[in-house]
Length: 631
Image (cartoon, rainbow, N blue to C red; front, side):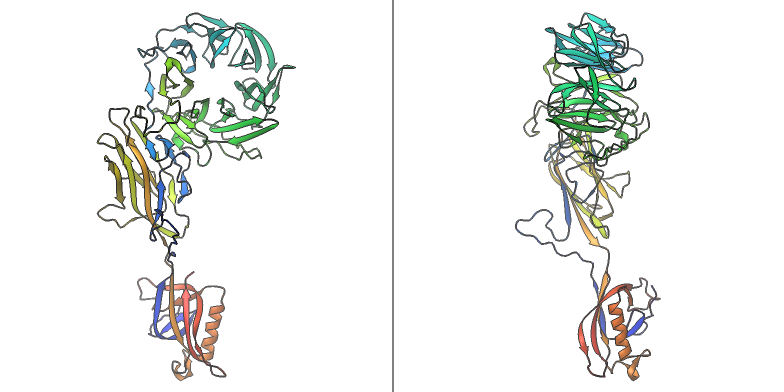
């Protein structure tokens, strides 16, 4: 900024012109927020000099990395804690690792099934049964001709069966002791219309009304290897029919003639289309990488919705992968994500109301496998694997052993977790088993207006059920850094207040963005969990400094020495003042010696002429009160 040097008292420089003034310049800080207007009862954000964000309801789930003040206060970026309850943030449910299978070598769990209230698992090609009393898998009951690709429990001809598909056919049993291999090629199986159905890798469908007797049916009009699933679901006419999910979208079976017809929704080609597929509540859910399509069919109508978990900001890098299994429970649609499987990057936009998203590419063997649950509102992490290079294999919801559980396989071990049979109130249920630890990370918080300075003042954390063993560690991160600063560990009930940067010097901590992490842990009693009731963040917003000043320009004859001031007459000074006031561009202003000030107060300003006095007739003079303001 180039301005005249103000060496003498009693003058200012405005738009490059020196004007004489009467009295002193009165500078004012104009960048001040207006006072809050409160009508009726107050809220925690009603205080006039600070703003407040409160987290207490996390039921909208994970998947938001950044938020603007309070626009996503019911979301988290990532959490392994239970987020299903208002005013409760709890440890995750306990996952029980069953005993080693005893099957040697390197293998995966191809499928699981239930028969006569017991769980059977295909460890590679070896099928074994779980002993719930001794926590053991016993000896191999049968050896499959190939690795299992699917399993199904069904009732045919008045007999209950369990069958494992394995591409070389399917192997079935009615009692768990005697097993029969059927050589009809089978990759996936379904039970519909009182018949057993199977489909092979080429897309050949078969049907059976008597176990072990199959009749070929329709053939998918797509290349070999494209079929990813088989299930029964409602079509647009409202009838339950057979569907095959494929890389190029779903196909609907027609009985007469026996054909497969391409069905809605139209899905772009994706190698993982329909690998996870299930009916749950009123919809069919079809996965594609990390995307899940919810499809509702009615009478000549269809509604398709993308539900995530790749929507919004998706999942953290270490938790990405591909959905390999979808299944329903009483409270949740459950998604098993194999973190070691890279998802192909595919634009899923189809021009409809489904929206658009990109599935993220990750490197093989870098992610942690997990199970997520969706309750119709948001996604919650049910379980997170501990080994980043170990694949997740299969998942099953079952009431075997008269206990409602989720079973899954990961890293050559089988796990189970007790599932609630209804909606839980953590204040009323005291027998729920919790995992040893869990973490919860809020989104990055930024202020809505980008021309302000934000200052963190306090964080109030309310906790219940805290003890010396049941603890909550509180950290915060600043300005998108990956590191955290510890605020402390909570071991007592009530509200704990943390000041920034610390209680000794609570002067505040400046931030462009800030996030918080709470880490919950328990002691040896697995029915105990600390309970975070709420987190309340108090911060101040301050506008960037904008200055104004008021002064009186002297255009009187007394102030103009010899009728002029610095070579300009009163009329010329008045014209210069009018020119500056009418300027569309900002004009330069200063009232100090620019070369001697350590912090030069030179400004570009708008001019306001609020009042004054001026001579009439042929005399040009008077006093003009001028206010200048930085916009």
